[in-house]
Amino acid sequence: MKTMLSMTLAALVAATTMPALAANEKPQTADAHHHGGHAMAPATLTEGLVKKVDKTAGRVTLSHGPLPNGMPAMTMMFRVKDPAWLDQFKAGDQILFAADQVNGAMTVVEFKRK
Ligand SMILES: [Cu+2]
Image (cartoon, rainbow, N blue to C red; front, side, top):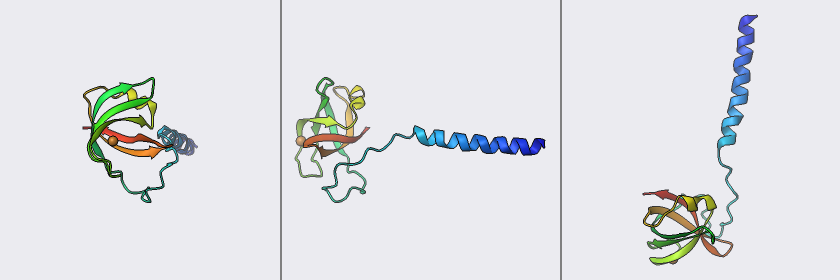
């Protein structure tokens, strides 16, 4: 009986632990950018230099290299997909990022630190 009980407990622990782990994964918001026709392709990351962060406006000014959508290198403002990212940016940061048109505004949809 003791063995049966511990096996049952082990199964119970496994059953309750796994959903908890899955819940930790950040839910992926539905992508609003299917116009490119390659939504499943890995994003091409572009070099960017953070010039200015405006948390009130929810924008970051980046000096960016040429973008895959044909935009040449320039300095411009971007919105960010997750406003919390603005806390991670500061002037002088070098990042690699992907931007896309979201609701008509160029938006950083992915980034990583260099
Ligand atoms: Cu630009």
